[in-house]
Amino acid sequence: MTQTTPLRFQLSSALQQRYRSKREAFQLYRALAERESLKARQEILLMLARNAERSAATDAIRLLRLDGAIPDEPASLRHTLWQKVLVCGGYRVATLWLEQLEKRADRRCINIFQAYLAATNVLYKRVVNSRLLRHFGN
Image (tube, rainbow, N blue to C red; front, side, top):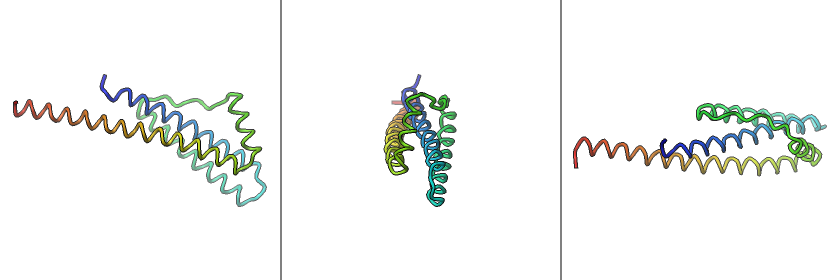
């Protein structure tokens, strides 16, 4: 087991959280668009929903590359109630909430990815140095 395995697990976990938040954003934007009476705002909300769906698909691909599991769709009562409350609150409340949710998930992914890159770089340097020592001797 290498030093990067715990970081891969953390990155996979963070990507799962980000995937869930993107899927939640997709569902919420669609629900808001269905409720919206202004055509222009409805189109914007549908565009945001498509963007969230594409981001979720990208995260799913990344998870598969890390051998991580793609999480199931949230179907809990808590999730359903939150979505209804946010839809009733309107698009401003919902978009502010989603912005905070996505920022938190993105920040977690970035931090873990930076740690993963740093650990991988350290391992690479160790391998190169050990090969150089073997090749040239002490």
